[in-house]
Image 1 (tube, rainbow, N blue to C red):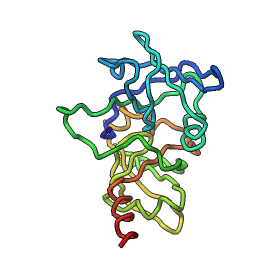
Image 2: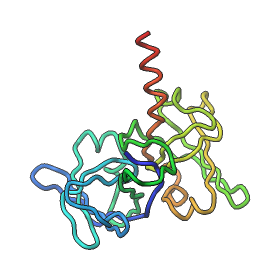
Image 3: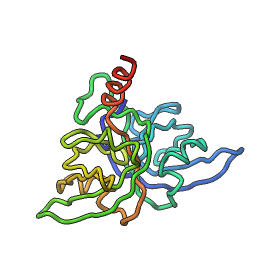
Image 4: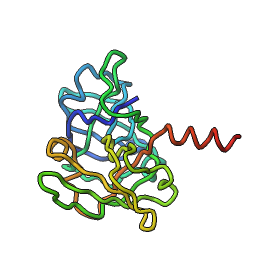
Length: 198
């Protein structure tokens, strides 16, 4: 389990096919501390397994389903990514419950300064909009964020980034039109499932 509190921004170093599998290698520092082969690391909110480690990099394999459902297939060497290790049992729970299981991708539509903050508008798939509510949680590229407002006609939602978040995660630095990974609040999905079963 993750919390959506990004530990550092890393970068894609290499992307290559090996034995029919796509392997991605990322540069990192904090995310490598105490990490062993077989451990999970969230990359842009996607829970991945480290299959190789060096003092400055880790390598993961991504399946075709992961490439279809996330923005990891859009990455090029040098592109920055958000990194987070799983929450330790004795760690502080600073964000919200993030599983690292992406529900779909949205599109970055606007970045507008609001004093020192930045207002962000993201277009989401219509099937995810019922789970996105004002003052609720959403993970965008693995970053735990609070929804400010929702426009269900346009299938968009708004978030606000404080200065610290602008500097700590990739969202404020992406070009408009970029795809972003979205994970809606798992509690909402469980509630819906329970209600549907009566």
